[in-house]
Image (cartoon, rainbow, N blue to C red; front, side, top):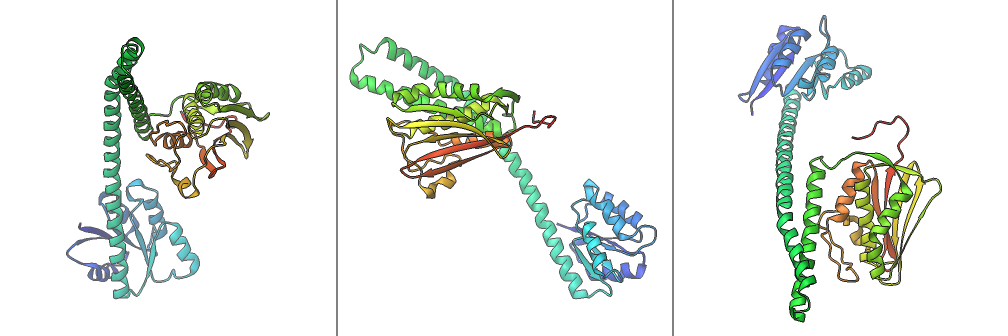
Length: 376
């Protein structure tokens, strides 16, 4: 990488001496004897560093720096002020406020000048490399999301056919099947359903990371919302003889967001509570207002999660040492998706748990004030 350095000073002898200090084979030095000329060069060249004299006629170094930092093309170009008289603290602070990252004082010390310039050029090169790698990583991430979405979508149809035909065989031909074959059929159905859940989760992740998941947000009634989610999970609770209830604070009336996505979150939390709870226990859903947030909690009397594992429960493909009480499966993606959906609403999701005493998963959604702009 050949560095382009701009040195700006209204005195030709200063430009000459500074170029002599800085000149190296891997550098191209540009000279400007006024602020106007410096801006012209800066807007035309991809500069790695600008050494800018403070005291110049017509336009001083502070003004030049202000313009450079307010322009997109030159905003990130590092600026070092070179000055003979502005050594007072107030001038140095002003220079830093205008966007300079360092000062050099005249008469210039050759060793210090070279050391600072070498360091700044190295940092600038590293910054450019990081930005380039970030662009490449973003591109790879977009390609990954596209592939993930396409692959998941294309696999859903044949997998759906397997589940449909397996269910048909189970319903229509169960009498003629041996117990061994019935078990095989049940394995096919359960495995296929688990795979379908995994594909749906992978599709959700690809959509979220691609920015496609944020749908229409509306005001909706919290009580109706919670009742709907509870009803959709009640059958699972009844099968395990788990009491499923809810309570809503008097101050909680409505919430603003994407109801489908928030339902996905709450149903996932309730389903997990049921999945990891023993029979004849209870799961409670509560909603209240706290510090300007609507806070919804799902509390169980289940096994709890070891403290050492709690910090990772929202990571993708993470499974704790706690096992479901009836052999229910898990993709390890549900809580990660829930976290992404809640954060896309400007909220937070968290866990409090004690091993052997149960867990509480909670999420918050900010209360929307009137005339507050919302995400589309």
